Image 1 (cartoon, rainbow, N blue to C red):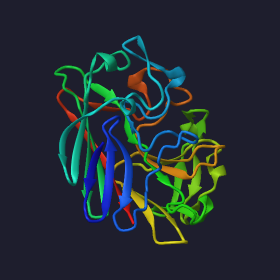
Image 2 (image 1 turned 90 degrees about the vertical axis):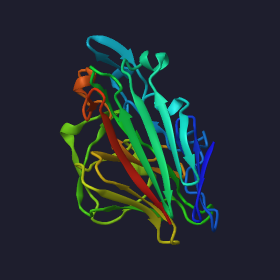
Image 3 (image 1 turned 30 degrees about the vertical axis):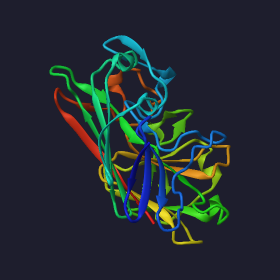
Length: 293
């Protein structure tokens, strides 16, 4: 377990999956991150790579060859190397191996960088294509889960809300089972805060089309001054999720550079909706920030 710390926050990150597992306030020891109770969901904040969401029948093709890969990819279940570590900074790295090539026939280097600055934790993804002649296709995303309520015994799920800025009506991409149905986008009015209710998630995650516009989602309550604010600069989508019908005491705010297969997907990875590419020797850089208050 790798620890970062400053005068405001104590942070823990597991080398397994480069997964953020704990963010605590130094002053009052409030734990912001969901603690992975398997009764509800046994993860904290997995890294989603090289896919976000589910593939049709958990399989896809590249150059006519079929490969199998389960939801959200394999990075979340692999051990990363720690290549840098200071009090306020750590870099985790995963490289392609014989094991990954069985599921994903491409070379890659994935780095996840965590940087702590006062009340802010920045998370940065760098996907590098080491190949000299093959283009690397992929998706990537985050899945951080936050305790609701933040203080045990102080409030309930419905006492919290998610405020989205810019305040406007967003296009929402519905899910049909685990697959996206972008042809039947809905409109979700977020000009006012969205009060949390478990029934919001009866069709799985709420997926907002951000169109790469800088967006902040704030999880907060009228009962106290504590919450989190997640900011994305250049993401196509964000997911808001809590497991249903379980009445789980957490909600996820998920920055996505990718999305589950479309209901009409042909299975060819290159045709996959919201796939990104890194050319030979190129890198792809994205990230997000979480402010804890």
